[in-house]
Length: 376
Image (cartoon, rainbow, N blue to C red; front, side):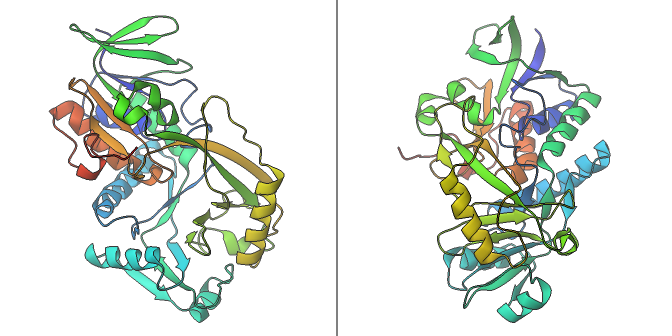
């Protein structure tokens, strides 16, 4: 037997599953087609938002609290500042559903928030240009994650705990057999007792048919813009932000290089047939749309992007991750399908996946269960 547990994909979730399992004394090995911290998958794009006040559902908030604690623990253990507490803003009209849901979920789970009028927003956060009637909702528990750095930190911390990682090794098949689960790579067959599938956009080939035919790898485009006054966009002055203006779900983070500010969501994620081959360049139309959005909604960013990029993620029909045992064989656990918003939750998802492996029980997150009903 080569290991007790194999983790397929050492990325956003897989690196943290390795960290969790190794910390529990499990003999665990991870397979990664690139190397931990690469920018092609769900950890691409340099930074991610972390929020406690969450419009997507009150049941997420206990998971987010757990994830926040674990991000801080990882930072302490690794010696890397992977989480920057800087607060978060959600901007939109008071009667828009995401704003209503955000306030209702925060109240239900006792998350402190502050509702800011247009005048208060202009005084405190003049970087944003609000449209008539819009407000801001401030979440003091929010912050910024250094996503690629966090994956590298988790992988290295897992190795320090005893985990093994096989980089540049693409898994071709996972086959449960009587004696073990067989993992086929280009150069050999590995035998393990259990497998956690955490391969993001590459997970489809390993999922049961009812999920493989319904999840969708997508290309997610982002851009970086030069501020006129960089001091306005450092973490102490500029919270992470979401805007639900027009039909957009815009998001952004503070500067990490004292030169550029990240803005995403100016275009919708596009389905791609193969996460190994997608265009990271932006079309002229994408750049034009982004330029118009940035010029309209930000007061002090140059609207021409200095840099653009794209990465991939795996989307589910209901945009909830898939977490738990799959099929009749209890030796396979899946933890994937972040749907563009899973990175912040990754440590909590990883901890639940580790529970499923070690205890042999279903992860206690029913709305993420692989057994839940999904539409075509």
